[in-house]
Every structure is written in structure tokens, then in C-alpha cells.
Length: 84
Image (cartoon, rainbow, N blue to C red):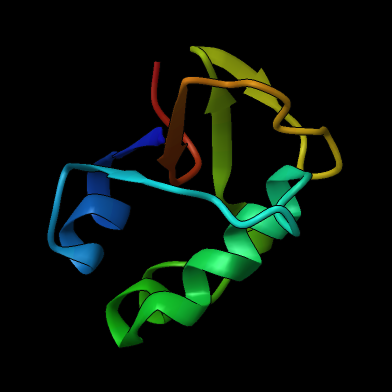
């Protein structure tokens, strides 16, 4: 099981702050994960519709969309950060 943690408007649109899910073997990269999540329901599809702006952290380390998930135990998903 992998813990997914959602932040800011991603959390609001999905309707939960975190969840534990079993990822299918086909989910290898961050991009694969985002694509898979969009199949889980309308709320996920809405939250991740502009996936190119979504940021992801694997075990609290920022990751690009082409990076493999590997054995990450926690994956944070959040919108772009602004401000100072």
C-alpha cells in the first residue's frame, strides 16, 4: 500500500486529505500515477485535469513526472506553490 497525501485545492476537489491505495503494476512513473488516479472517479479527474501543473513529492522529495515511483511509501500531490 502507498499513502497518497493531497494538498490545497487538490485535496478540496478530491474530497479527502489522504488515502492508502494499492497501485497496479502498470503504475511506474509519476505520470502513470496521475493517469491512474484520473480513472478513479470524477472528483479525481477534475482535480488532476491539468496534470502538467500538478507537483508531486515522493517521500517528501520533489519529483518530475517522468521519474519512477520506486518504493515510495508516501506520495504528496499538490498544486503549484506561489508566494514568498
